[in-house]
Length: 273
Image 1 (cartoon, one colour):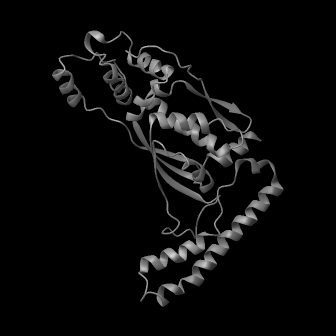
Image 2: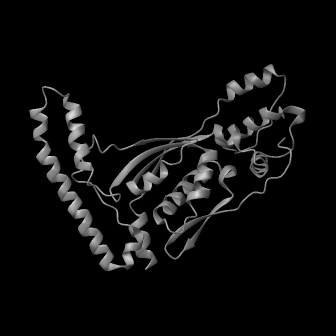
Image 3: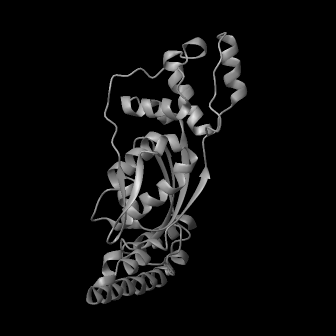
């Protein structure tokens, strides 16, 4: 049963990493030279991790002789444990998420601080052949699944009929309204019958602190399988990008799919140097 649920809710999801943080070491070295100090780098640290470390060290000017023997991983772990996460905001990633529902994105876009979104527009994109994604938990309830299929099929039919009927507006009103706005009006009317199950695509940019907050708050909701599946995929992509920033998250299994489990850091008054 759990395999069926996972296939319904997660196989369609695709997440693509389209941008990552970078560190201009030349510019940083110029700063260090002007300050007559140096920075001892950690071998194999990623640029995202180094960017966060440097941001933290600037707060204390803990370079040169003031630099502690901690490597990058230990330094960042200490920052997070202290609750000094503002420096994590300097590292951002952009993910393109496809194969999710508008129900999912309605929840996702409620995350505002540290997030930017660009989503497929139903006002300009023809949804006649839109895909509808069934909630994973319907797999074990055939009667509910049939009711769901009837509803989305009726919505698809209604969308096409509304679109076809209102297309006459484009010719009738072309003289008084810009063609683009006529099409917007037509598709706005037609999209009003589309369900939350409609598949969509969304570009999401967020900094490390905001991604961590997303994982902590959204990855552990037992009743939202789609959200947990996306959170697991996000962690799968971001952890190799900056292990020190996401190593305190792990994925464990429930009967219906993955859940993100966060190993909380306790905030302590330790020095970040």
